[in-house]
Image 1 (spheres, rainbow, N blue to C red):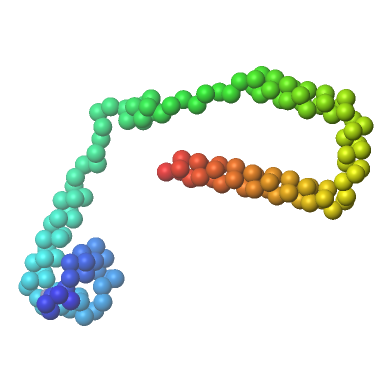
Image 2 (tube, protein in one colour; image 1 turned 120 degrees about the vertical axis):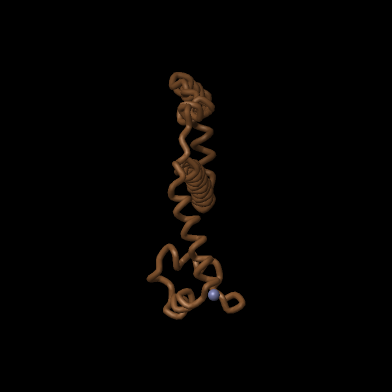
Length: 145
Ligand SMILES: [Zn+2]
């Protein structure tokens, strides 16, 4: 109530959905000329808003927006394969030639240290995967309209 009269949101509620307003407020509108006049004004306003034609563009909005979105470059699959092969060679050749040293080095490390290294590698992998998933989820949610 506002100075004994209904507030605007209650009058709007009365116009839009009369059954949702409580009995006391409905009775007040029925007996109060001031609130009835406000209700009539809101009713006229709402009917005018409903009569307004929805906005229409005289151009193809979707085409204009799509033209401004940068096109995603396609990754060249061959470059990924080539980089993978070069990386495998750069890692594999020294391991092949220094195989005995690596075996001696790994045999010299205790099981606890090796398991700690394994756990650390596993944790890094888990965090990387979670980070990638979070990025993916953020991108998908930004595309959702
Ligand atoms: Zn009133």
